[in-house]
Image 1 (cartoon, rainbow, N blue to C red):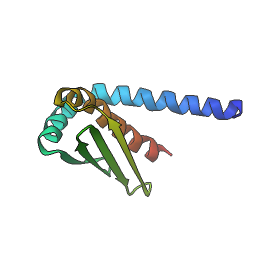
Image 2 (tube, rainbow, N blue to C red):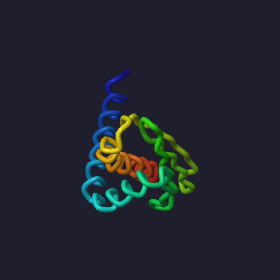
Image 3 (cartoon, rainbow, N blue to C red):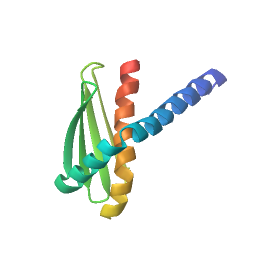
Image 4 (spheres, one colour):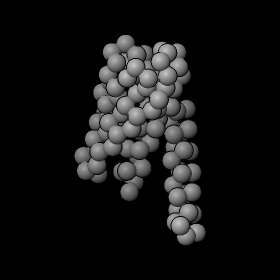
Length: 109
């Protein structure tokens, strides 16, 4: 890998992880409500910036699927969170921020 590609990757990583932190702080109360709803219903569908995001709990973690009509792009991700409800409760807010960060960055191009 050349230095230019590494620099671009580093810049993207910095922007992506910074955006996750920013969203987690900005929307903490909404993510708390979403966490409660997802833990109760096991599936949660939301709309964010014109994109649809669906979260599904599994016994050991959580999936999210995005459908972003503006960018004509879909993504999916799974994260291991462990068996317990309390570990999922701690992990889900950041996972919500991650899904929304992907939408924002896709829309930015």
